[in-house]
Image (cartoon, rainbow, N blue to C red; front, side):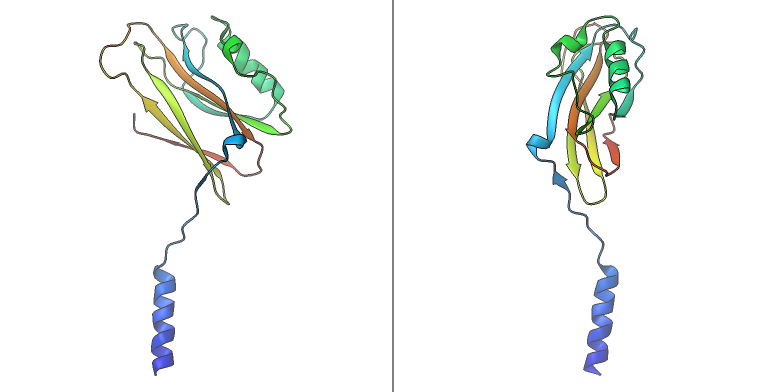
Length: 155
């Protein structure tokens, strides 16, 4: 009787346990900030609000050309030559804003099933310039076979 009671208790505990995936921040050396800031072309670059994963040179060149269409933004990148056999580029763009002071932050974590990119959108606290801006954040990460998913805050 005690063995049956124990077996039922163990079974109930096992059924009630939720699977928890261990989220680990990627190592600092696995993530490189290429650039973050704002585009100042009043949306004329034609870049929509997006979360983009770039895995080849052609798409990377296309993105840089769009970003450079009004102002030579890529001159401020920490690097523009990416070895896509070793790295993947994450590019996040917000909507065009009617004022300055907006920014994006990324928190990149991985687990056994995917790479999660948490996007935080920050608004100015107080007075801001009345200049149209479009926040962006571009980073490269070590190439992985895991799918990349984006999580965004409510802002």
